[in-house]
Amino acid sequence: MMDWLGPEEWQAVALSLKVAFWAVLATLPLGILTAFAMVRWRFAGRDLLNVIIHLPLVLPPVVTGYLLLLTFGTQGAVGQALQKVGIVFAFHWTGAALAAAIMAFPLFVRAVRLSLEAVDPKLEQAASTLGASKPRIFITVTLPLILPGILAGAVLAFAKSMGEFGATITFVSNIPGQTRTLPSAVYAFLQVPGGETSAMRLVIVSIVIACAALVLSEVLARRVSRRVGKS
Amino acid sequence: MTLSVKIRQTFEDFALNIDFEAPDGLTALFGASGSGKTTVVNAVAGLSRPDEAKISVGARVLSDTQSRVWVPPHRREIGYIFQEGRLFPHMSVRKNLLYGRALARDRSDEITLDRVVEMLGLGDLLVRRSAYLSGGEKQRVAIGRALLARPNMILADEPLAALDEARKAEIMPYFELLRDEFSVPILYVSHSIAEVARLATTVVALEKGKVSRVGSAGAVLSDPEFTPAGVRAVGAVLEAKVREHHRDGLTELDAGGTALFLPKLAHKVGRTVRVRIAAHDVILSRDAPKGLSALNILSGKIAAVRAGDGPGAIVSIDTNAGRVLARVTRRSVQTMGLAEGQAIHAVVKSVAVAPEDVGR
Image (tube, rainbow over all chains, first blue to last red; front, side, top):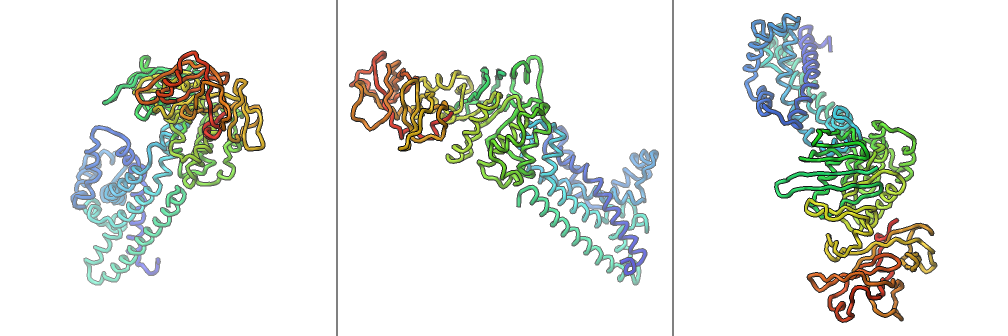
């Protein structure tokens, strides 16, 4: 594959995989916590939180990217504060990962929420009468039961992160080797004469990765649901 | 150890005001649906928090709204057997059984996995996924799981209600075992008079959120005034010892010196069993009956005659075997001239007593 893809193309694929990996990894704990809070806790501002989480799903991605730039950019308040502790998002691959994570977040939370709503709280009650504390109940009962939802959500989030374009290019631009992810590279190749073959190769890679992700999630989900005893 | 419960809670349409004590043995919380039984058990388990509560086991206070004590459910050391089993579907039977055991403070070897597996006949199920068990199997595992958590008290909320008659008959003996072999107070919620008659040592009857009666199962069920499930469900409980299994398929029991013949029982000779005799299965005769096909004749004195609103009346008879209730028509009471203090003979057909009516 290294030979078949040119160095620039390979760079874009590798960067996209890296960005998607970190985006999903960051989404997992936060997304599970958010889904849990939405389903099981009653707190002030719950509806507002719900709206904010879902905004990236309905806003034009360019708008989300611009808002990220305003907040996390070199001039942004959060961006400046983070810069002092050595964390940089602006025009850096971490910014691409942040944009991907924000865009993938609502998809992930929705998938986990659905599976959490299907978990019978009576099972958690039963665990508590058997001596399990709340954290233990979560780890031994709730988490295993929502595993199929978490997997499905993670695959969705991964696919979304691989393909994120609008927010990424607005927030961190299209710098080769730094923020030129797979879709940005396809776009860039199509802007120059003779770039179509490179673009086509990247399109094929995209399709292969997407299909592989779908098959993997199917296999995992089937294995998990057999373990959980539904099928 | 005694479980003591005081609960007050106001709901939209009714108020709960309950105060009772459950000694060792099996205390049946008995009442129609909507009488507040489940609210009581859930408060004892810590799964709900009533407006006012004082709940303690022995000297240990579990809930006291006045002094703001509230022990969370996982520290209450209870074993809760739910109506629907509530097994963890993602675990094997074995893991379900051991779930509470790993968390129990008391890990003495009195109740081991092996003992529970043998007692409940779970050997063949251990490696199975709990999601694939039948209703009766699930309930057996649920009993084992609760027991292995080494509880100080066992709660059971209508554990047989979701099962068919055959499964009920299969599970009931396990509750007798729990009651007789382990010195843990059991609070057992039920609306079935047959279950209560067979299992309960103490009966706490609830009516519209209040305790209407407390006492031993024999005393409460033999009270002709106690008709929570309608007159059809009235029946007294007698204690008797298995004397002999006869070849013709009958088992002879000794009830306070009087012989009782019942269809063959599985219980060993010498065992004490409880027999529920439904009031509508009892015929009364003023003279010692002769030439009758019925095998059981209990002689005694009429303790009370209570006429109902309908055509029926309930006659309480004190016999050597204990108190027997008979449901007869008011017309018979009149024509026979039945009255308190009279000598009377109560006739019971052997085959009228179903196997479900006999427990130990």
